[in-house]
Amino acid sequence: GTFAFFLGMEKDGQPVTDISALNMYSKRAPGKALAMLVLLFSLAGVPPMLGFFAKLGVWQAGVDAGLVWLVVASAVASAIGAYYYLRIVFLMYFGAEGDDRLDEGKSSLLSGFVVASAVIMVVGILNMFGVETAAISAAATLIN
Image 1 (spheres, one colour):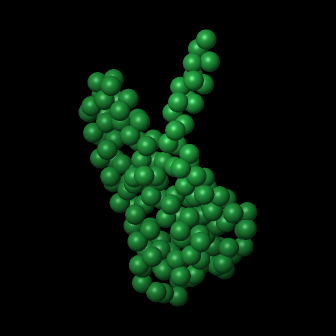
Image 2 (cartoon, one colour; image 1 turned 60 degrees about the horizontal axis):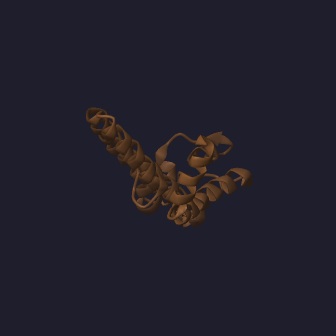
């Protein structure tokens, strides 16, 4: 989803690589900005997003395997990555107004993909609770 958003960043038909183009994007396209907020929070591992539970599961497996040093290194790398993800969110909502505006989404397919990804992220959070029993029974049927 986030990659579809960045692939769709264009100005005058040319790809945009300057992050300042996202300044106050939430005023120009509030739906896509909200979708990106959800996706970037998930990538950063902000609770209660799905990315948090994915990282938590990997870290628990690392601790159980006795690889605490690897879990600590992963947490440090995750914190560094979160800085960059949350910087994009900050610019989209609180960045300085400027003339460096993106073209309005020409590709409705990419825009739809970004929004659909965010919706799946939110629905996944809601459906995650209570799925554990079904997952355990599904795994049991594969073993037997």
